[in-house]
Image: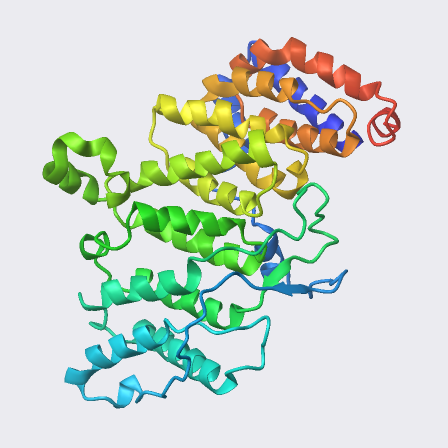
Amino acid sequence: MYTSLNAIFLLFRKHRKAQQPQQQPQQQQQQTTSNKRPSNSAPPPTQLNKIKYSGGPQIVKKERRHSSSRFNLSKNRELQKLPALKDAPPHEREELFIQKLRQCCVLFDFISDPLSDLKFKEVKRAGLNEMVEYITHNRDVVTEAIYPEAVIMFSVNLFRTLPPSSNPTGAEFDPEEDEPTLEAAWPHLQLVYEFFLRFLESPDFQPNIAKKYIDQKFVLSLLDLFDSEDPRERDFLKTILHRIYGKFLGLRAYVRRQINNIFYRIYGKFLGLRAYVRRQINNIFYRFIYETEHHNGIAELLEILGSIINGFALPLKEEHKMFLIRVLLPLHKVKSLSVYHPQLAYCVVQFLEKDSSLTEPVIVGLLKFWPKTHSPKEVMFLNELEEILDVIEPSEFVKVMEPLFRQLAKCVSSPHFQVGPSSGSG
């Protein structure tokens, strides 16, 4: 806490100094610019990425729990191994590819009887793995006939009823201590996600064909899966949604020409998919803030939004500013803030780097939601405040200086052991 307060006061002196006349304004401008964080910096990684790139082993504090979503198991699960794609004559490969995609629509039981159908589960796993390699290392294999089959295979395997939350209160879940509930069917689901990601990233992929099958309903079902407790699944979802968001830049004019007067009815036809994705993420946030206070994928969704905000054109649209005020700032009041705070703070700072005039409503909003009795949460607010003060303009800082330092004075005199004694020890 002391470190945070000390850094904030140093930034305060920097802003005060900036208000005074300078002999060398050009030098001052260069110094101010050099202190700012690069605007193209990446969003903070979510928990899975921290584990993935930390270089050290994950510390398992509690036994991992395995659960399974509610799949509609296939009645006929006796799969026959098909010939390898690489061994088939070129003119037969498309049909064989389609057969393998359809074969992988067969669903198996991984939870109530995990030892059942082992032979046929292996046939499906091997088929999925083969298709991942095939679509990655070969050109001209994503033909028009493959699009509906690939989307159907993905939908059948992934769009499902998630298991009930093992920790419905949300705030009681500690990502540093508790192990998430892992999806028992992951040996197949992982390869389905991997295949679909390679499908989207293929040089042969054509958005004008894909838009017939990846529609509004598809995106909504994809967003529903962000509530999965399995961080591996949320990590794939984050990447796939990001790819979908960025793949259809040229379709806006196309759809406007085709549908014209019914623009607002076709959000999901990839003209309005960007707006639609934002609207649906907003709806998830609204339910999280004002109704359930529980959702497993908030950090991942904020990480996606951090990249989206980074690409916003200037001047910012009014709807984007309203998103900051009505969605991002109220997320600070949720009791499980610690799970997603780094990603949330990144989004807020991105907005301020885009438009410094948002400084006053952001600071006022933070002060409105400032924790009264929760000192660890207060530390998070102070850390975020430090990041904000590092990027705002001195002229904007003056507008919020008085209420801000009234709050900091309360922090200095706080009786809480993380706030008062620590800040007073310096």
